Image (cartoon, rainbow, N blue to C red; front, top):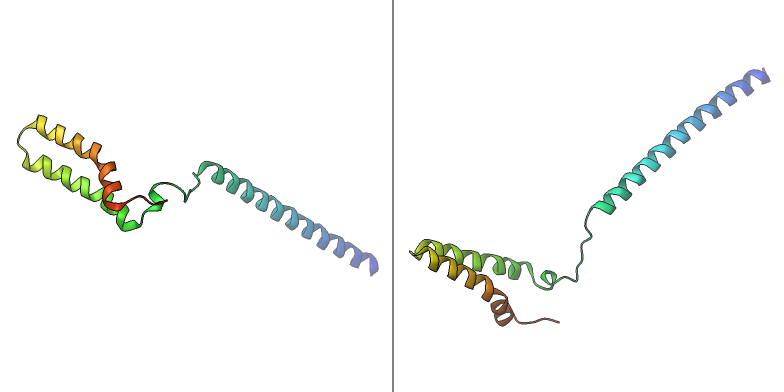
Length: 105
């Protein structure tokens, strides 16, 4: 009787060890995958220049020049003048952002 119990206990322990090893392999594989994903994805930095502005300000910085460029391309007849005005919008944009929205430190 005790030999049978010992055999069953050994079988239970072997099955438990097998499950434990499988679980350890899954955890190790998950950790390796997470480490690879962490190394591949860019880290978000909150100290960048765009993060100093609110979402509405960033949207305005994007949309106002875009609308101005579309207006130039729709309303101005000459292609050379269109290109010059578009380049001017791109060059003047940083100065306008500083003047209109102000510098934040």
